Image 1 (tube, one colour):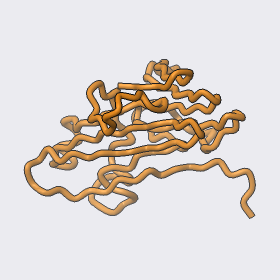
Image 2 (cartoon, helix red, strand yellow; image 1 turned 45 degrees about the horizontal axis):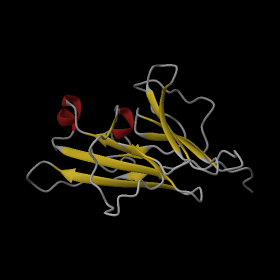
Image 3 (cartoon, one colour; image 1 turned 180 degrees about the vertical axis):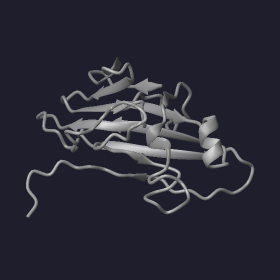
Length: 177
């Protein structure tokens, strides 16, 4: 499900590979672009149109390659701290728009431009990591231009699981000395 205050917008487009992308826009003109491949934020621009995230010129936006830049989601492990591929497999999976997210607010307000994403394990995931899970990720672009990513992990295993989740953000920096 996606929501937006009056004047804000949420729309879904297809990239050149046919993968859905969600565009969030607030009333001041700030935007965020999210790919359902990896559930990854690809772009975050302030109201002046300045890009706040780095995207490599060598980035490929086609599975099974990892997208180099933006905000990749590392799950169920970060780096090589575990027996899986570096940063886990969530960044290599197709996410869906969550049509029935849990509601954190009771006042009925639509709130900022936002989208709720969902990832459940596929057969390949269960072969690599024998744990059933559900990741719900709310991505919201606030009126002041802040971008909020709020993950919720549900253990659907019936037994304890060990995991890590990280947002490996590539910020755009104009000059490093």
